[in-house]
Length: 302
Image 1 (cartoon, one colour):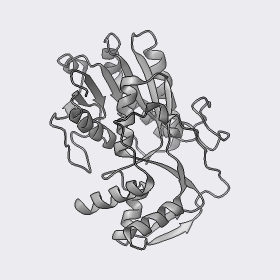
Image 2 (image 1 turned 120 degrees about the vertical axis):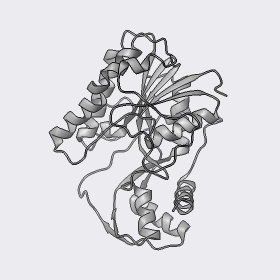
Image 3 (image 1 turned 90 degrees about the vertical axis):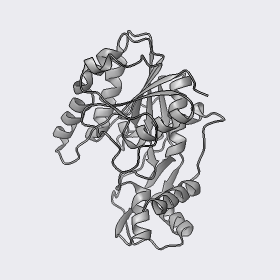
Image 4 (image 1 turned 60 degrees about the vertical axis):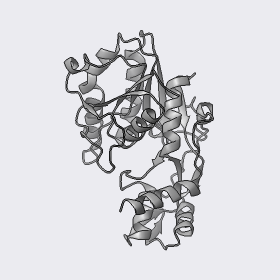
């Protein structure tokens, strides 16, 4: 399907980057999976499945041997949650924008077709009025959200005079095997199958994509995006309802405390436009299928 097309991925050893590299290769694309900055040489919690190995790049001279890509997908994002608010903001801007300036410079005169930046719905917050659409002006509340919005504006400005288009994908949460242990379905698995005591944020909602669906939407955005921004958000569920469905499917009781951790705070309501990126070959997963996938893969790989 993608024979003859070249995709360059930054942050290739992250969870999304690893899955996208493997999927692109299976679709016949030529993949350049880059590891920049402090990204690990290999994924932390999964096995690297693509035949092409991650390529560590430390400076601009090491980029000169690479093919010119048709598409660039920017997954790279380093965080350090142990820092103070201001320190986190400085850290993320430095490590994800400034320190990679040699790579942005390298791209400036490349005749690529599209630069796809993986952003987040965290550029919005409870400071925004509901409902939130792609036309809503972001009001981030966290260092992560502020830095992600800064990156969007940086790419729009820096690549303004290039021949290629810049597209920002604002993603909701993505569920997958090998995700960070703090993510919802991984915590539910720990609470159900390993007896770990967890806390369920009762009365609040979550939006969940399964990873196989979101990476196909990302690939299709690289190929066919017609807009400069997309809001990729699945339908929302109360977190306690997700936990109840997890118990039903697993047949196990979750060891959990149900507590409202954000009393008085309203959850954002999103009007997603991810449907514009759907295609016949883009796989879809409902909540039950997503829960089943997480349970099966965690049991297989325990």
